[in-house]
Length: 419
Figure 1 (cartoon, rainbow, N blue to C red):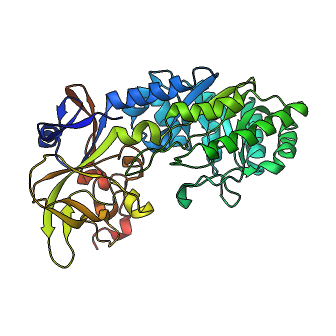
Figure 2 (tube, rainbow, N blue to C red):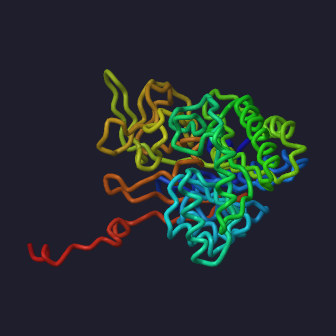
Figure 3 (tube, rainbow, N blue to C red):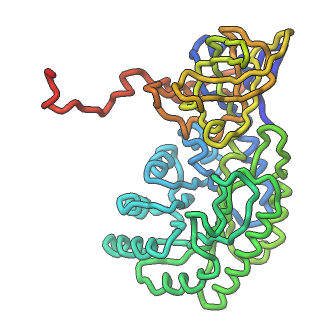
């Protein structure tokens, strides 16, 4: 559930008129609902109340500091995949002992940073990585807490770009080889084995793949303990999907039930890394119609583009198109496109939508996850503003970039001066 509804024909975020925000902030902008964020986190967390657990929000979904702070203030941890995300998490007040570090390509400087801060766990994803971490930890005089991310070779029934648990994926290690790899890691003097990690993909809409994964991980944990390798944490990643169009993902309680049945007697703390399910439907992208083109094919040209929201271009994903101000009138089949000089710059294709006019405001729904966090300045378009609404007040949580921001850090070498 989210708190974006029409009242008397005008779209509101909680108790704030989207029109009023647009008049003050300009367009395009991302708008997030604080009440929705809190509800989603508390619902997810409560679903696992019978299981020792830690909810580590996946920062890659949306790494704005206000979003991170919202979840941190409710006891959440953070799942990171870079030194930059670690920096963001710490700036937002995260407890390092509630931070897990995933990702296949951790640099040495990032590993040192995480060790200095004292994070909970490194989720290692290759044979070489534990050896690198061991060497760095040794030079620092510390022990590094690790888990190995295992690849259970389970089809998550999702888009191939976001399926991460198959044998051919770049993520994790073959679960069949995991025992020997754990035995090797145990012999490394500057490592502490903390757990097992597994993440099979994103935007999953059924519980079956999760059940398969936790069953295989459970078997591995029991084998490791039989070998004298203690396992205190089982990190099951994230991946629970949301409704963009006609998907019917399981309720968090149904998801939790599937996990708890297999994990309740493992005597360990479970780590979950939800991202999209917490923030996806808590955010919208607000854009304004610039032009309309009607003919053999119809186009609605708006001031948001693929650099602001790349999911439709990258994944062919569906984002619901909603008029900010409802009005009676004809509908049309059209593409909603942006100003980027690419044929792939679209937010919707061949979609039935209102016959928009220049100046109309449009809400692109379910844009809270992988929206701003995947945005760019392609075509030298400054990145948009981000706004958080709480009840009847709204807060600018990221200023719109300026043209000067586009060239910050650039240098023209002296040999080009005066040319």
